[in-house]
Image 1 (cartoon, helix red, strand yellow):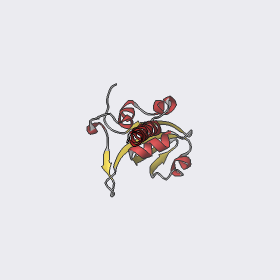
Image 2: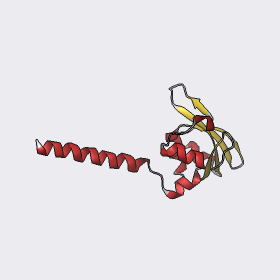
Image 3: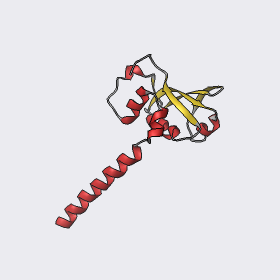
Length: 120
C-alpha cells in the first residue's frame, strides 16, 4: 500500500513539474510579448476588456495580435492563420496556445496586443 501511495505521489509530482515546465517561456520569448500579453500567457487573472477577444467556431478564445516579423511564411508554417501582412507587420487572431507556438520562432521579433491603450 505504501509503495502504491508513493508511486501515485511521485507521478503527480512528475506531472506537475512536466506540465509547468512545458508552459514556461524563456526570458527571450517573454521579452517578445508586450506587458498585457505576458500577463495573459502566464495565466494571470486578466480583464478581458483589455484585449480584442473573439470566439472561434470550436469555442476557443482568440486574441487580436500584431506580430513583427520579416518572415510571415515561418508563422504560417506553424499552422496559424494570418489575417494581413504589411511589410514586417502581421495581424492575426490567435489562441493562447498559438501565441505560445509562434513566440518561440526566431523570425518573430515582437507580439503585441491590438486592444486599448494601457500603461504598465
